[in-house]
Picture 1 (cartoon, rainbow, N blue to C red):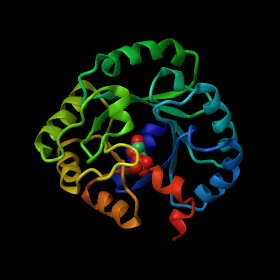
Picture 2 (cartoon, rainbow, N blue to C red):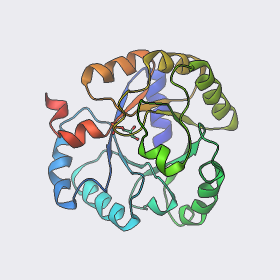
Picture 3 (cartoon, rainbow, N blue to C red):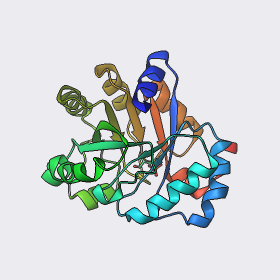
Length: 236
Ligand code: 1GP
């Protein structure tokens, strides 16, 4: 099971890296080349998802990915229409930073009949959006406000609430293409106060920033835009 592998990596102090592919932003004809780059990178996982993707594109994208890589593919869905049985697992997200019931329970309920027809491993994941300097797609689509980047204690409290509710992982998100990534001090405080694996993403654009996130306590870092903009990002 993928979750057990992630948990065991955390326990051993092995850091994980996911490359996020947004099917809206990449053409199917690019997949073969991108997968070669991913195979030559330190990535341990591929996340697939975006705020406004159609399901039929996702299926085809994952089929093509799987032809070229053995890395696990985990869905990172914006809504229940983005579920594909071609993937290995799904982050079953709860937007803990927001107060929009659609993203707290409505989408999750609607996803169940779809998930029941798949063999996807479902990984309950708390999702906390942190203010990043400009409005991000997650804020726009979810119609929620991010949490204050100057108030790490409230973010810790939110992450702990998610852990008490039963989330198996926690995702600190600045938003794709964020101007400012999640503050390192916030990563540190959250990681010191939860036991479950900590994912960090949004606005991370350099190897130095990836290492700083790991050093602060991130177990898995997500890279989307930096790889999209330059598929040779990891070879520089
Ligand atoms: C977005 O955390 C991911 O959900 C990745 O963000 O595109 O800024 O790398 P970037």
